Amino acid sequence: MTLPNWLSLAALAAATALLWSLRQVVLLMFAGVVLAMAICTLVGILRERRPMPRPTALLVCLLGLLALISLGSAVVVPPFIEEFSVLLQKLPEAARTLMTMAIGSVDWISDSIYGDDALPDLQQLIPDNQSLIPDGSTLANGVSTGLIGLLGLAGNVGNAALRLLFTVAVALMVSVQPHAYKDACIQLVPSFYRRRAHQILLQCGEALSSWMVGVLISSLAVSVLCGLALSLLGVKLVLANALLAGLLNVIPNVGPTISTVFPMAVAILDAPWKAAAVLGAYILIQNLESYLITPSVMHHQVKLLPGLTLGAQFIFTVVFGPIGLLMALPLAVVFQVLIREVLIHDVLDRWKTKRLVA
Image (cartoon, rainbow, N blue to C red):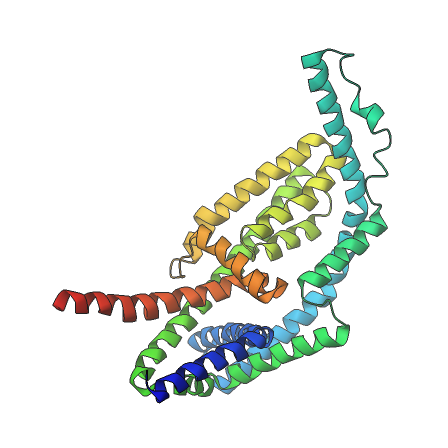
């Protein structure tokens, strides 16, 4: 290798090391870009229905989002917090009921197989299962700590506010001048590949936009269906559980599983069959979402295989931490487009063509 080649390789290694050390900042910038894509998608939809200058449409969308967030904070958040606190207080009672039922079932099975006096009853070995389960206040503190860690707010409030402010600032700057930032990114690509890079960036933007619209619609559908199911079953805390199901639906595989725990814990306080009915209803809703709702609203979306989705969640969580889990899907959407267009189409397919010609 010549000296320029060695210098290029050293520069690439230095750039990779720098990006790795700043990976949290890069992830926040990516989150800002995703938020900017959502805003630009709303602007595009508004301009299609109501022709107007882009700055006016952007201002209308920002004011609408601000009004929607304020209205949601004033109307939805207080009752949600109240119901969620009640839910946390009821979880220990539900856990004790489950433990009592499990111990009784094990005793009944052992008595049926080995006889009544062959083995000691678990009730005698564990006379006080109340001490094994934390009370409501301890559980609430633990859940709050876990949620804070999940959201990346393990530091002080100022650090969290700074991260949020940085993400929102990036989103606003990109949404005001999307073409300028896109052109700046293209300038970093070698000149012979810039036209192709422009096409790939457009495909990434289209994939992210369709993914965000589809996720919003499917999450709203899951929230409504879960609310209707819990209302028909007579389960309490409908609003908290329905909102939780819709929010956690954004995180595939992990989110829907977690969302079933809280309504089942509340339902078992009334009757064991209600917990089983809630589980069956949630499984039915998730199948409807996976095989009917999502294919209907995301027929132009980048298709992500379940195995690839789970692998992306694991990899991005290891690399970026808890925030990587929340951003795993949009990252996977972008990486799938890049791998398909750059690695497969531009490298492997051309290499195969050259070998056939040779």
